Image 1 (cartoon, rainbow, N blue to C red):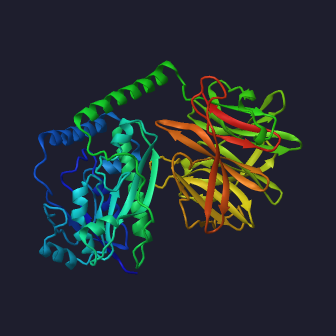
Image 2: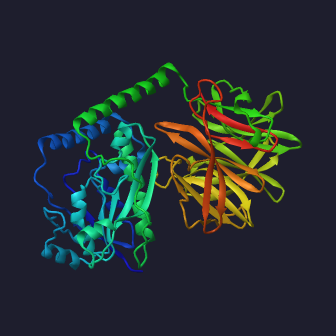
Image 3: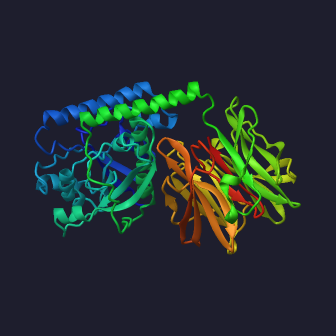
Length: 547
């Protein structure tokens, strides 16, 4: 199979501070047998020295990122992006290209030297590139076989410091994209720039401080870039028909005033976190409520609450109807152990009788999704810490369960749901492909002939949803031969802000589509912070809430 020759374009003036994103790509590319990293392209400054004000803004932003790197404890998966030294295979060629000082210009000798490398792709992994420089890149894209791949933010013409403005303005979603500037010698520079199209676009829930959000941006954007490079065969991938969404006026590298406003926002967020942690101990509390009615007639404000056991909270309720009784399986979280088991409750019109733990492991379990197959009852609880999708079979209802099958291994998956539809079994699950603990941004779909198998076929549109506002599973409902997927909405630094009721309108090996019918907001009880789950067995309905 043909190896793809890759050239990497860097900008030495980028305000990346403690972040060295190019090293992530170098480490990854050096392990891919299909990629041949030909060299590193380092452009000279494309314009005169910036004004003092802009130079100070870039310098202070680098200092801000370096300070946060010392202050905040980062998830281990993100340390690879901050590493200054990368262990990579020696580059076959190190080549320097100086960009012209005027947009649209390109020195013929430089283009010829670039063509001599016979690159398939030229990559720009740094989004801090001005609109003028983007036009300057067009001739260099034409000197490759397939063009230029670029990581960028919400608008293709917008220079950006990834993730800054979203945190500063407490936006719920931070967006990213991988775009392609095609190689076409018959087009002029401006035309090539205008034809820049989106290959991958997505978003994730905004993290609470700049460094964490920026590292998450790079992790997600790199996952999209890696998908493009690994899936490309002997032909360049097709571009999406539309450009990135317009998210307001262009916002460039933040000035010092904007950075000071960001620090105030960060101080307010840290103050709230410290208050919740030390003054309101165990402030991260969830509860479960039920009502004896189908979900179409549910009145959440009239539901009854299941009391939380001392030192624990309940969440992610699912119902199984057995012998005219509704049994509720829940995540039963222990504050002392900092993990949960699966417990059961017998629900009546008047009370919730605690049965107790029914599945206990030495790791965290949650989201106990039930399904039936060949007259047997199964639970598929979330076991993301083990990087597995597990299925437990009922031995003695509802007290005794045993591990029956590991459907997938070495996969970071959460909140999996299995169900039959039109002669196939389907698996909807939330994957953390970026490896940053983000299970709320991508919904993936698989199908098989039967549920108790390891032979699952990934849907060609995977991920079928990339949106932290509605990607994460929160329950599955049935009515009138239709399927309804309940999904979570994440907020700024807030997990489970609300839930959405979505009707699945297309489900086939080639198509997936759903429409949102209703939003469930946390206003049914006093002083709530969020809600993120709903389920029903047709006779009883259950949901959870954060308080």
